[in-house]
Amino acid sequence: MTGFDCDIVRQGDTLTGPFRRPRQMLSRQSVSGNASIHDDGTAKELGFSGGTIEGPTHFTQFEPLAETLWGSEWRRTGCISAHYRAPVFEGEAVRAQANPSRDRPDYATIRMEKEDGTEVLTGSMSVGEDAPQSALRARLETLEPLAEPVLVADVPVGARASRQTVTMGRDTRMGDLYPFTLAEKLDLITEPNERFDSELPFEMISVLANAGADEEPFAVRRPSVGLFADQEIRLLDGPIRVGETYEVSREVIARTGSRKTESMWVEYRIVRAGEGDPAAIMLLNLASLKASYPDYEADARALYGEKIDG
Image 1: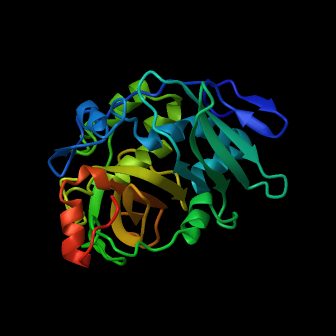
Image 2: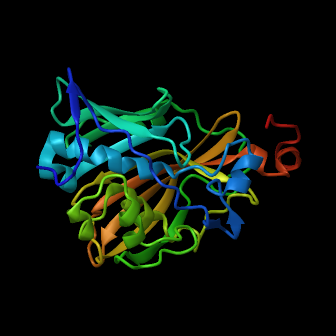
């Protein structure tokens, strides 16, 4: 029994959850005083049809699949690792799929798709400290370091932020980055579960970790618009509990890029107050859109003496 009211279909080795329509809860998000990709106007200026739904919102649809595979161990040492492939907009339906490894009972590949088959994300889930390398850690090993950064030129690999103390109660306001409470999220969450009254769902571990990021932001050049391109949450000593106090630290561990984006990969360590070892670790690829920064070409010339394709 998982505690989820969720019909899961098994076809061969694949587990598939039902289509759900996640809700957009970040339309009022403010990032360093600017609107975000989740704002309709900002998103449309960048060529999107509207404000996008935050990527970790989708993690909740994988939780019933994970608990079907691994029971309560998922809540103690679970890991979900995702490469975001396509945005989702409010009103669209998506479903989660997991394909357990035949060789490793502690590992599964995952996929999310829209009703038309559009791939929303791919990645992996696992449990236990000896699980195979996650999809995201493997992906990061294949990416070349960013050679001539502009947007993240002032954020070197190894940059760290001060440790912050954070607690999420049911009615705690989590700041400008997350203008909603846990209680408000649970009213709209795609897969309700009574245990979420005392244990944070994986998507809200993302909020806990990142809520204070704008209080001591890394020096990404602004105004520019960012998005989550890859994300992993790994429990080492879960669950992460509602109302418990944690200390969160952040470190930039890599910088990569693409034709349209510059990325800083940030590792978040979530430690129970007064303890030394992390209870959870989050890895996040924060990708900034070159086209959203009006001085990109001018800054590139100033830094490197020539135009960089934007």
